[in-house]
Amino acid sequence: MPRSAPDPCPCGRRDPRGAVLAYAGCCSRYLDDFARTPAPDAETLMRSRYTAFVRERADYLLATWHPSRRPEHLNFEPGAKWLGLEVRAHVERDADHAEVEFVARQRSRSGAATRLAERSRFVREEGEGGLLRWYYLDGVMR
Image (cartoon, rainbow, N blue to C red; front, top):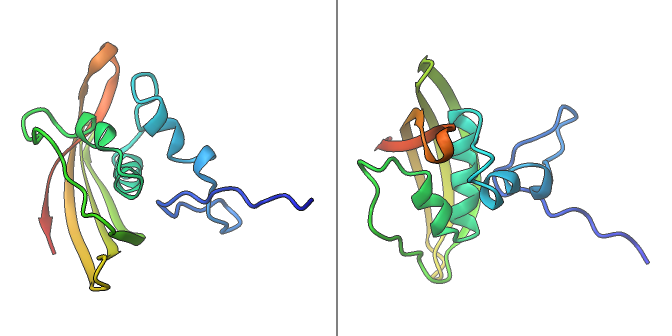
């Protein structure tokens, strides 16, 4: 019986050979063990948040949103399909502040395609369990 290919990570991160990483070796560690495994940098957090949108993981999205800006709850668009992520820039402003510019593409249940282009701001602070964690603050649509 042929082996099935590993489940590719929705964030699209690639290994040194250019192959898309498997979910199990990429964003899964952050989504499935947030309490002990925070994202190491703002770009990784942004990529894992994209994956959380794809997988409709409101728990992770809310936990990684800065408490000062966090909404009470999230709703996902029924039938929407995320089509891909392109990270255009990752800029570290200092040790605890960074920005990530990205484009995410989505198709609604009706078939309409949308493109979300944003420059997101992130901050690193001590979080739950005393670990330093990156949090999403906000973003400016491009």
